[in-house]
Structure formats: structure tokens, C-alpha cells
Length: 254
Image (cartoon, rainbow, N blue to C red; front, side, top):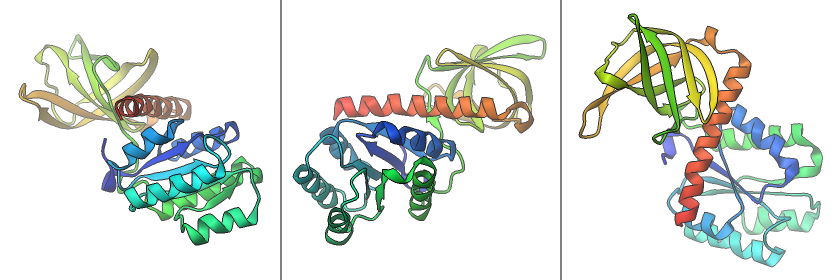
């Protein structure tokens, strides 16, 4: 689970229904977003992700005294983590306490301003905190069985297992010892990921070996002309689902 220059993980703790549209918009903007309803497990996980950003919903999970204690514990245990608050409560004293006394770095957002304004505020906050890092696209590491690619190559139908996925490309291991070179164009690939099928074309831009088997991994960038906005949205959604599932496993083990 990479962090830092490859981007920061953004967590929403006890996200309310009114925030889900905003969360989807942040994912569309290629922020790496996760949801959690386990504040204690998330607290433990954050200690392993010192650069992460956490938005706490003050209206759920704990009472006000509990949230004040919780935020203090995060600040003490993981001082490099960014913390923001979201709430429907317009109490100015509450806002001042978190911003001035606890000095949370990522703001205090009143959700009554609407999804569009909320998304704009959170986007600016995440950009100010360099949440994307140097990358342009969120990637998901694909565990065995997550997805495969079928494509015609030199008169044969090839299969490959996905090892990584983003809305811009993928990494895959071809079966049968097939090793297409850099620059090879793969037309009309059929991707099956989490039961969903996506058609795309792409070009192999790099190859490398992984693990003791030295099995070849091929990095494929999708041809932008083969990916319309609907397909790109589906890819972003799949990346978010795969990453959330991996993070849920981390929570279970915390």
C-alpha cells in the first residue's frame, strides 16, 4: 500500500449519505479515496500511513467528547496525518475549537452548502496537501483472479492476468510464455474485471520481471481513442472497488 510521492490515501470516517456524491467526484479526479466505519481500526492503520489524510464525520460514530479525544489521539500518534472535519452542525464554537485549539490542517466543512461546493472545497484542500503526489492516475494492485485480458496477437488468442490497473493503463502477465515486445499494439483487448467487461486498445510501453519466477510483466497504456468517458468512469470505479477491498482486509487485520 504505497504512500508519499505516489499519492496520499484519503479516508472518510463514517461518511454520511449526503457526502457519497462528493466522494465519487473526488475519485473521478483521481484522488485515492477510502471509506471506513471502524474508527479504532482506522486509527491503528493510520500509524502505518503517516502521510494519509482523514476526514471525520462528527455527526456519527462517537459523541462530541469522544471525537475530541479521538482527534487528539490521531494528532499524537500520527502527527504527519492531515485531519479535516465534516458535519451538518453550524456551531461556530465547535468549528473554532477544532481549527484553533486542535489546529486540524484540512478544514471544517459544513455539509449544508451542497455537494458541488463541498467537492470544490475538498478538492482545493487535497490539492493544497499534494494528495495526488506526482502521479496522474490512481492504480490498484490486482490480486490473483481479479481480472484478465483476452486479445488476438499474431493469429493466436492470448490471455493475460492483470497485476495492476488504472484508468490509463494496466500491467499484465501473459500466459504460455508469450512475450510481446515494447511498442506492440494490442487492438480490441477484452478486459474482464470483477465480472465487468471493457473493450480497449493499447500499446506495450515497458516490460519487467517480477519475483523469483522472473515472469514477464507487460505495462500497457490504453489508446485514449479507444476509451470513451463511460469506459473511463467504469475503470475508475473498478480501481476504487479493488483498492477498497484491499483496504478492508487491512482493517480486518488491524
